[in-house]
Structures are given as C-alpha cells and as structure tokens.
Amino acid sequence: MTVNHHVRVYKSEEDLPRGEQLAWKIAEVAADAVEIEKDVVDMIINRIIDNASVAAASLTRAPIVAARDQAFSHPVSTGGQGASVFGAALEKRTSPEWAAWANGVAVRELDYHDTFLAAEYSHPGDNIPPILAVAQHVGADGRALVRGIATGYEIQVDLVKAICLHKHKIDHVAHLGPSAAAGIGTLLGLDTETIYQAVAQALHTTTATRQSRKGEISTWKAHAPAFAGKMAVEAVDRAMRGQTSPSPIYEGEDGVIAWMLDGKDAAYEVPLPAAGEAKRAILDTYTKEHSAEYQAQAWIDLARKLHNEGVDTSAIASVVLHTSHHTHYVIGSGANDPQKYDPKASRETLDHSIPYIFTVALQDGTWHHVDSYAPSRAARPDTVELWNKVTTLEDAEWTRRYHSNDIAEKAFGGRVEITFTDGTTLVDEIAVADAHPLGARPFARENYIAKFRLLAEPVLEEAEIERFLSLVQRLPELSAAEVAELSIIAKPGVVASEPATKGLF
Image 1 (tube, rainbow, N blue to C red):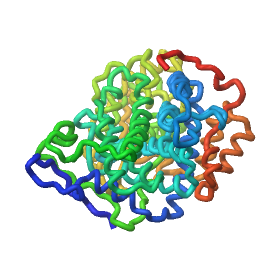
Image 2: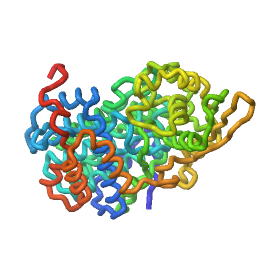
Image 3: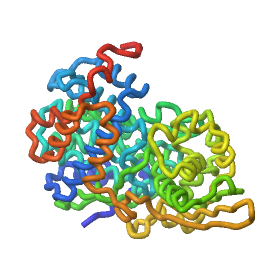
Image 4: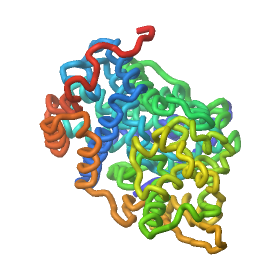
C-alpha cells in the first residue's frame, strides 16, 4: 500500500519531529530491505542496457571526452577498488564520484534514455551511473545493485509525482540528488539516520535554476544530472563519516519549499511505499525510441505516420500542434525562444524545438540521433520554410491528460491541424509514443537490445557487445567481480589513450 505523506513548511518554533520529515520518510523507504520483484528486475536490466546504448553513441562527443578526461585526472580513492568509465578498459578506474560524473554525462548527452513525467519531469535512468559506480567501488554484488537501483527509481518517481520544480524555474535534477543518495544508501545497507543526512545534503547541493534548459542550450544540459549524481556520492560519503546536513531541508522556514518552490503556505502529498511494500516505480517509466526530448516522441511517430501516408509537405500553409502546457511552453513556440527557429542553433537547442523536430520527421519519415540534427539538415531551405510555419498552442484537455495520475489516460502528444495552400485541412492526433507501454509498439527486451546494437556497433567490437549483453542479463546473479565488469569497452582508437582536453586537474 502506498502512503501519502503530507508535507508543508514549518516555522522554526513549530515542532516537526525528525520522523515526520520527508527526508526521513525517504530514508525509511531506502532502508527497507524488501526484495525486488522479477518484473522490476527485468526492467532494471532493460534500463542498464538502454543507458549503455546511449553512452556508446556518445563516446566521442565533446562533453563526454571532457568529462572522461576529468575523471581520469583523479586516482582511485581509498576505501575501495574504484569504478569503470564507459569506453575505457575495465582495469582503468577512477574514484566513484568521478565515474558517476563521466558516465552520467555519457548517458545524458543525447537525451535518448528513459523518462517519467508528472508534476515534474525526469530521466530516472540518471540514477544508475552513481549507484553503479559506488557498487563497483565497494565490491557489491548484482543483488545489492538491483536493490539500490530500484530505490533510486522509486524515490525519483515519487517526488516527481508530487512536487513541481519547473514552474519555479528550478531544474528537475533537484529530485535526482535525493533519489540517487537514497539508492546508494540501499545498495550499501546503511541505516535510516545516515541515509537521512545524505538525502538532505544531496538536495541542498543540487538545486539550480532551469536556465540550463532555456534559450541557447549549452553542454551543461548533459552535465547537470551527472553533477547531481556526483554530489549524491559525496553526500553519502560525508554522512557515513557522521556529518550532518541542513534540517528540515524540505519543510524548514528557510528551506527548499519555502524559498525555492511553492512558498510558506505550500502543501504536498508525496506518495511513498509503505513498510514492506515492493518498490515498483520503475514500471511507471518509459524509454525513448528517438533521440529527442520525450514530449517529441509521440510527435515524431505521428509525423512519420503522416509522411508514410503521403502528405505533400511542399503544399502546406501552416501546421498547428495542439498540445500540453509543458510541450507548448518548454519545447514549443510558447517558450518565445527565437533559437527554436534558428537553423544555426545547437543540437541541444534543436532537441528542445518541437517545430523543428516535427518538420524534419514529417519531411523524412524517420528520425536519426545524428543525421536529423546535422547543421546541413537544419539549414535546408525547404526545411527552414516549413519549420517557420509550425507553431504550438496549449490545449486544456491535453494538459489535463499530461498531468493525469491514471496511466490509462496520461498522454504526451496532442492534435495536429495542417492547413494546405488550397484551403483543405488535415487533422490527426496521437496520445503516447509508439514505444510507450500503451503505445502501438511497446518496447520490450528485444527492442532494448536492438537499440544497443544499433548505437554500439560503430564503436564496440562484436565480441564486446556480446560480452556486455550476456553479463547484464544475469544481473541479480552477478558476483562482485562481475559487477566490476559491467561497462562497455570501445574499439581500439575510439577513445584516446591520452587526455584530449586540458583543464586544472
């Protein structure tokens, strides 16, 4: 049974027992040693494969190269054997917080892994790099790793269901710091008190503005969740050493809710598993078939369908996408970001432009994680012409469905109205992406493996692809030595043996 915890702001003179604080409730869930059910284990395996897929496709991209160079500027810390970094030889290790950093950037760079959207948005797969890095460092086995990841997903999803960050322009990784810290706490079998301190510290150090996802989007977009994961590792280390954190971090009169979120009169109902209840939140999440912002997934599928039906893009006068508040104001024309219509915009910016994405998918009938973002593709004259005819409008019903807690009606698409130059119109709609659990072609294990092969084949040897897939699919049975090998090794020459960037370290 799920329990809703009432969370509000308390004045300093009011009594709020530690056991009633949200950070403590989160820690109690993390410390609850429930077994992980088989369908959850299977989905955790899928998401580790998914993360490795998008990391493989990113190995040579500049943010990953820089993060990897930073990581290998730091030796393995005392107290463990270190953690692996995507692309590098297994014996080449670094301290766990830096492995969490490098691997977190690799996983996030292409915006191509899993998602959960509710009151807030999130990529819960961002929990995996820090939890896996700590598992490798301390010599944890596969069963412990599974339990840690299940907690990370559970806490992230529960916070995202209840507490909106973006309307206050706070970046969504503020939910990731606490969830990753909780997941590490479960992995390590820490007590409630220690996890409580780590959760509070992780939240305190990972609140930042959403400017990283606004205007001309920079490479920090990929680094932000990796930073939260790194801070979570450090918060756990600090808590394990007996150090304390700001309290109450959520409910205090100078805390996160009072001054960063809904203010002193705020109240939330945060759903968390009851004692002994299985952690199943990962099953509410969904991955991406296409390398684009999640709200674009269904629109790509609809555009592909219309392309295959023979829509003449040269005869279009206007395209209006009637959609949710989030899609309209964050990746649509409602953002009022001129960069969303700029053919010279960065890949990160184009990834957050539904007018661009719908245009290219409608013209090409497909979407590619590299080719669809190429500068030459964005600058094509017929694309620029059509792109500027595409706008979005908020539709109250699609906004309602976006925020619905009923999985059967929750939707991330909308209705398209295309007007042609001869005055005729075409209207169609889509609720969820084809790969969504309720979509036309829900992703299953074979789809995750196919995605991994597609993205890994250019950079991994066939034998390495098989080694990784064989290993990860035995996840709950893995020994500590085998968990230490849960990474991907690039083909010779793909990853430079010497640092390619120069900084302070």
